[in-house]
Image (cartoon, rainbow, N blue to C red; front, top):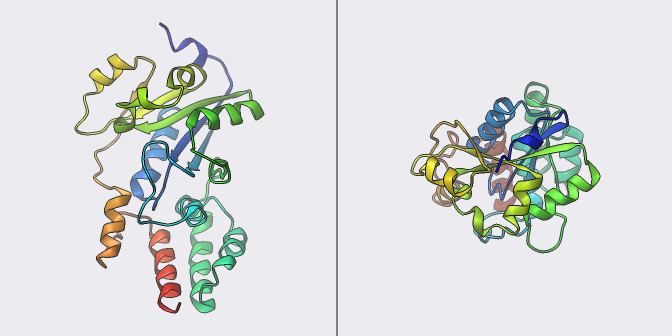
Length: 240
């Protein structure tokens, strides 16, 4: 079957990059950048999940913190919105002001209007199935040509995804290369996927959470602004 015919039109190409982002790390940011460039996407949307279908969110942060973390990592929100959002957490006033000053100093350098965050899954009830998310956005934006950006580990088990065959007909699967997986075998199993080059990066959110628990440095793994926010969280937790 020719799966490429429907991607030859001039509709807006929008990338969806979902995940727990618990916490977001440098590979998440780089993955979005690489897909954005490789597929010449018009927009890129990070979508933090509420309840993942294939694994539980453990040993990390709740939905609202994870939404904030990924928004910080890609500088999606203006400083005023970040400040208003974190008021709910009652962080120390002086440390909060320092953090917001840092964010504001970096915002103009790293913010891109075409990279954003959606809270659709975070604010939806139940398990976060990708097919439901795609249908929701296509219902509101029928001119979108959605590209689902995933890793090779996720592609290897696509047949466990809810309605994956239907999903392949309404969206394009963009799969990043990853060491330890046979791309030809996965492509033979799922001929509708498209594989794009991605450097080997050995970073995981679970590894970062473990290092944080052990009091070790994570600066090489996460964006600097995430380190600053985690320090703010620690300051709050220390005084409560």
